[in-house]
Structures are given as C-alpha cells and as structure tokens.
Length: 395
Image (cartoon, rainbow, N blue to C red; front, side, top):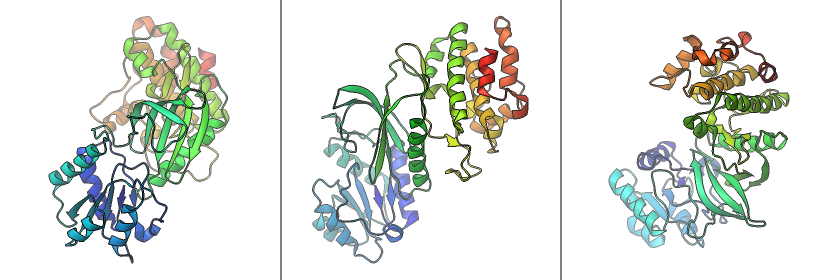
C-alpha cells in the first residue's frame, strides 16, 4: 500500500514495484484528498506499507509513529528528505531519499522485507495469504488451499468453508481507493455479486456468500472440479459435445439477457466444467445491466478479450445482447475446430479482423454448421441471430 499526497510520486513507486513484480496488487491512498487514516487503521492485508513524507498538514513522522505502534502493523518503508535517523528511530523498517530512489536498491530491500515476513514475493503477485496456516488475512471463516488466479484488483482461491469443511472458490477483491480505476473495479465487483445472486440456472455458477469490509470484498462460489472450457478445447472436443456445450452456454446467456444483463466477456476461461460434465458460467466482472441509465464503466472504454469481442465492442460502440451472441459464435467455432476464427500480432489487429475479415469457412465435415456460424459471426448486429434463445432453436 502506498500512502502519499503526491500523485506522481505514487505512480513512480507503482512503477518500481510492478517492474519487478508485475502481478503485485497495489492500493494507493492520498491523505491530502481523503484525509488521514484513523488510529484504528491496522494495515491488514498488506505485505508492506510505502509511506511518503507528503502528508498534508500533519508531520509525516506523526503518521509514521501512529502506524509503527499499531500491533501487527506491516513493515513500513519511509520516503523522506534528510530525516533518516528520525524515521528509523520512530519505527520505519527502511528509509529511502524521496528524490533519489535507486530502483535496484529499493527492490532488493523490499524483497528482503517480504522474505523476513515469510511471504511469497514472486512474479505472480504480492496478494497472498499466510500459506503456513492456510488462513488468508483478509477473510475470516475460510481455510485456504491454494491460489487459482490473480489479476490487477482481485485474487481467486480454492478454500474450505470452516463451518462445514465445504470446498468453495473464494474471489477476493482489495479496495483500491486512489488508483484511477480502483473504485470502479470495487463497485463492479459488488455489482457482480448482486447480479449473480438473482440468477437460478443450472449453467450459471452458484453463489454462497458475500463479505464486505472497509478495504476488501469477497465472494464464495461453487468449485467446478473439471477446470475451464479453455483447457477442454486444448484437449479437443467432439462435435456432439461442442453442440451440447453451446446449448448450455446459450441457455445461460438467455437467462442473463432476460434479466437485462449483458456478460460482455464471454470466453472459454470464464466457463467452468463441473465434475458431472455440465458447464457453469462465471466471472461477471464486466457484465452490466442494460436498464441502467448510467454505467459504472466510462463510455468509450473497451473491456473484454479481443479474440472473443464483437466488432461493435472492439470499437467501443454501444452493445446489446447480440454482442454476447457473437462471442458465443467465436466459442462455438473454436470448440468445433480447435482454432480461433481470428488471430493477430496484437489486440488491434484482431479487432480489425473481427470487423473486416470474412467469416471463416468450416472444414467440409463440419459444413452442416456453416449457416449457423455465418449468422453468429455476422459483422453487423442486425444480420446476426438476434437472441440466445434463437441459437437454441437452431441447435
């Protein structure tokens, strides 16, 4: 966590950290704009606190002393000018001159601090629990088994619910008060739960629990032991199974659309395979209610995965349920052939192909599905199948 009143300095520290630890999850706090953190602030959930000496109308050493005397507070790396002895005496674990931070020295010192706390300082993420005990510091009532994934704002774990030893997937999002997209990410995470909680469908993941505190939120959901559809595609999917899977996904999307929800990030990695072979649609972090007058995400911002984006989504135009239909068309094609319909050297070249390249032709032995692929991957929304329920009728 970075605490300092100067945005450029916070960005500089973020750059130093993410250059060495690309998966690090960083929260930033501006004490000038947001006010000084209260005495109860414990630093819980952070591996290290980076504290700058720009603290507004308060002597920064007062803030340092407040943090250092809090029981269990994380190590504090202090950044100042010519007050090193005082900062170390007050309780800083390490000191760097604010205007002359040498990257290698900084990274080595932070790495030493992390190792001294018996933390995992890897290139994946700093967002880890206490793996010695299996308990994550942010979430009570769950015993952690292993981390499954990590992203900029959240991490996903396999865990046991302590009250009944039931295996669940726990998605934990850390509040990021001052990063440009931080509050938006947190709000989208909460909206994700609210939407999923309304859904009761055999191909949409079951949600068991939501927890919210001042600096994090978590969702406990069912664990699908069969991995994700991406892994299944890599192994090869028989034609009949690809059809059956497409029916299940279309049915789930139809349910979403009936509630006024777009998914907007349909891809094989967001579709889990249960132990019984059925599919469960997950990860609604990019979903939105079509009926909302004001979206949480800003207009013109592109979200999603380019391989599965509709042409209109790739160009940040308005989207409706036909955009999800297009994404399902891409997945259906990939399940049938094992190949993505459009690939390129970078995101923009893929987006261009979705817009301009012709619909790919299936191999002869799959030609009976060409008409449906043509309708699913039509460039203009009005030329596509208009709803997920129509896909079910075709199949």
